[in-house]
Structure formats: structure tokens, C-alpha cells
Amino acid sequence: MKITVGITIDAPPDVTWRAVEPIEHHVHWMAEAETIRFTGTRTRGVGTTFDCVTKVGPIRMTDRMTITEWEPGRMMGIEHTGVVTGRGRFTLRRRRGRRTRFTWKERLTFPWWMGGAVGAFAAKPVLRAIWRRNLRRLKAIVEAA
Image 1 (tube, rainbow, N blue to C red):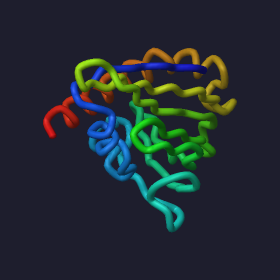
Image 2 (image 1 turned 90 degrees about the vertical axis):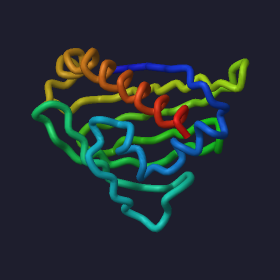
Image 3 (image 1 turned 180 degrees about the horizontal axis):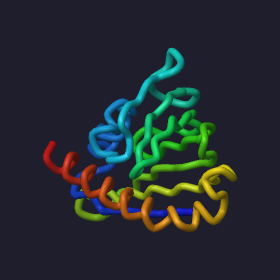
Image 4 (image 1 turned 180 degrees about the vertical axis):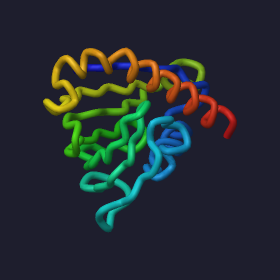
């Protein structure tokens, strides 16, 4: 399953990055992320590993992630290696008027016991709606700073 959502934030990329860069703060703007616990010594950059307890409706799971790409002010990439596997990326692009286009792309695979491709098909509109709401929350946080 592939999902892409985006939003334009009325702040430049370096200001937007300050809200996105601290991974432990993602729980403030990601509704489905309940807790984040680092599993290694790193908390920033490529190689950072963490577990995120994620809850969508009645389904709660631990999403294990590794940062695979890290370009401050521009991009953060992750690999999901928990129950749901795949890759994701946040990209920040400068827009006219000191604004940022923030794009969130994910390519995820559900295990057979979550319905595999059929479960992913059913989950896609739900996840897209949650992630759009998450981006509105991120926008509000960045613009209030």
C-alpha cells in the first residue's frame, strides 16, 4: 500500500524541521503514536532506532523503526521492521513566501493476519485521513512557534 499526504506550512523549512527533527516529539502531532522509546544510543540521524506504540481504533501494536535517511531541513526517511513493514519519508521543500511544502510518503505491507493486501486496502483511507489530520496538527504547532 502506498500513501502520500502533504501540506503547506507558513514557515521556512528550517523552522519546520525544528518541530520534526526531535523524533520523541512526534507523539505531539501524530494522533496514532502513543509513545516513542529509543532502542539504541542515538536519538537523531541515520541509524537511530526506536519503538513506537501505535494505536488505530482497536488495533494497538509496536512499530519498530530505523532512520535510514537524514538531511536536516530537507528529509527524514524510515524503515518499518515491526508487525507492519515498509518505508516512509518526510520531505520538506521551500516554497515562495518563506513557506514549506511538507510531504509524507509511506509504502507499507500488512502481515497476513491483518488481512495482507486486503487489510491494507481497507486501512488506506483510514490512515490517509489520520495522517492528513496529523499534518494539520504539525502545521498548527510550527505556525504557533
